[in-house]
Picture 1: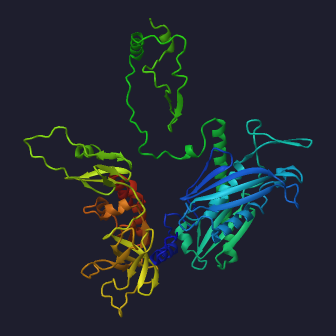
Picture 2: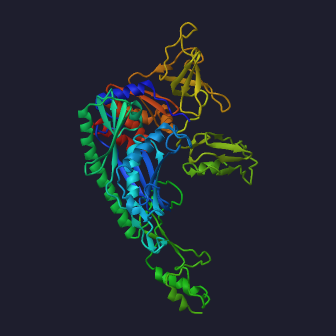
Picture 3: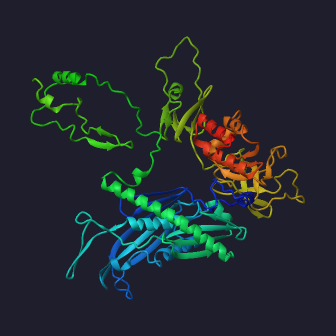
Amino acid sequence: MKDTPLSNCERDFLLKAIEEKKRLDGRQTYDYRKMKITFGTDFGCCFVDLGKTRVMAQVSGELVTPKENRPNEGIMFFNIELSPMASPAFEAGRQSELSVKLNRQLERCLRNSKCLDTESLCVVSGEKVWQIRVDVHMLNHDGNLMDAASIAAITALCHFRRPDVGIQGDDVTVYSPEERDPIPLSIYHMPISVSFSFFQQGTYLLVDPCEREERVMDGLLMIAMNKHREICSIQSSGGIMLLKEQVMRCSKIASVKVSEITELISKALENDKKARKAGGKCGFAESMPQERITALKMDETPVEMTDVTDRANDIVQKAEAPPQTYPLQSLNNSSIYQDHCGDVVEISDSEEEEVVILHPEKADKAPT
Amino acid sequence: MFSGLKDKVGEVLLPGDEFSLETDDTISLTERVKPEKVVCGPGLRRSGDRLLVCKSGVLRHKQPNMFWMDSQQRRYVPAKGETVIGIVTVKSGDVFKVDFGGSEQASLSYLAFEGATKRNRPNVQVGDLVFSQFVVANRDMEPELVCVDSSGRANGMGVFGGGGLLFTVSLGLARRLLSPHSDVLSDLQTLFPCELVVGMNGRLWVKSSSVQQTLVIANLLQSCDTMTAPQRQELFRRAAQGAL
């Protein structure tokens, strides 16, 4: 399906607004959109929201034979999928130019910068090594897919835990997560890419362009850096001429942004670790805010609780004696339903009981 | 059934809910039996003697007997007579192809402008905005647009758009802006003066005296979609005071 064409009046208005240093959503020139990082239930699954752009990364690992020229290094494999869900311009199956460009940029950013220690992925030299595969899926395209993809990929790599492996002589045993705790990958540094868009032949610069700004831009400069101010990859597309001072200025801005983003990632990883340790439910479903308007919504009805024990006693005494052999199971079988406020509401499974027994021992003392 | 429908006004209904034509058990012999007539609006469909809901939303009622489903939708389906904002994509020979946000592009003949003849062609370029109405809009044929009404006058339609901003909102908000005595529109009038073109395909074009004011109005309209009336008035008041 073709994307909505950009009208002349939108293009003129956007360029005029950029000349007056105004952006569509009220941001400043160097501002990023609101970024949100959440994790799925499995280790290695990460969602990144950059404004309305939404990206998911999933890391998985398996044991394979290594490459012949590098027998004691693990293999890293990256794949970016432009799902048609993200934008009507993306077609399923066909490798478009944008898809190739993003794949190449992510590979250069993460693989060539040696952010992951590949030698630690070796199990048996020449025979078995870990292949770590990072799949990034675009869920919604509202500009700046590259930054969101790089943040999602490196966060998912930091979040991933690979199964523990034991070697005894020639035997290699892979322990399941229940037998031994899975171990994290050894990550040296976190390269993050920052995108700069240029307008009017390099006169105006915007950080983190949204989708409409991307359509009217002249060129794009992508700088991948880590928080130690080391440049991992730098790429300019669109054929614009940039001056040396402009590139230096962009790298300074990038170092500031990268340190902020790295801090956000570390905080998100910390929060997730704490949530998992506390045993709370974690994952994609829990991190989504509940925005339903119907479906099982019932108003709270106040329940009169003043003389409930007396009333219960009356009901129990007037009821027939239950069969003596089976202890009452109604409270044990109830499922614990944790709703979004964190309050615990018990729903009883048993539907045959008409009477809810509040004190099981009273029933045993019920007069026959 | 009328009473059944009346009971459910204001409730959320889902596709598949039905109202059956129940007649009363007793028919009075002395009173005149008036045939009940119920006018079904969008989202309700008659099937035999049942009334089926085919869109999820809230059931609304207008006196004396009009019922319809009020739902949020962003995807536009063309209907004859509706005015939309389109973007010209292709200029080929005698016909322009216009994108209006539907499943296919509509065709607009170059003669369908006021005062256009074979010699006097209208000045339309690719990428221009046109405000036009549908003359053919059914699901079996390619939709067709014209920029004149039945008497040959432009009546506000045609090419427009220098200097303003085009943005999209949900169809419900566009309809609310176009309804007579619309409160959203009257709230908007308390802000800065601006020119506003509302297309029923959810596209709005706004132009105000400065870029900043245009951006403010565009952002306000996009965010007041799901707000209640008091929230919206509060938001507009804050914008008028210059806080936003």
